[in-house]
Amino acid sequence: MGHAHANEKLGIVANGELLKRYSDHLVGIHLHDAVGLDDHQAPGKGEIDFDALRPFLEKDIPLVMELRSGTPDSEASEGLRFMLHLMEPVQEQTSKDTDANN
Image 1 (cartoon, rainbow, N blue to C red):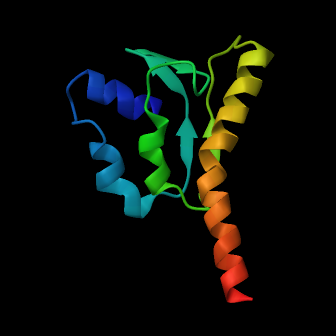
Image 2 (cartoon, helix red, strand yellow):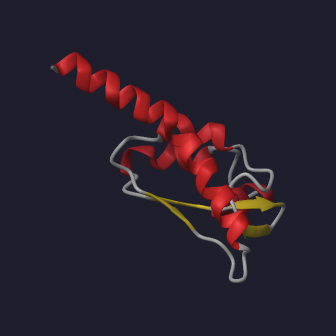
């Protein structure tokens, strides 16, 4: 999400354009937050709207945090909690789908 955000801030692509364009081809997502072009911050620490990512998340797509060297453990932990919260609707839907199939 951070690199897409940088491209949006630079005016290279419109907001959300990369997700829309490549959503059918996602095999993994590496996440970091950003403020302007200052990126590789823990998710939830910057200005990226991660809720916009929710419609593109699927249970089998791995999420990986990519943080700058020297990020405090406490911020990395907060970023992990943020990502788990982000995944809650996907996990809930997966549970409902599993229950419906049984």
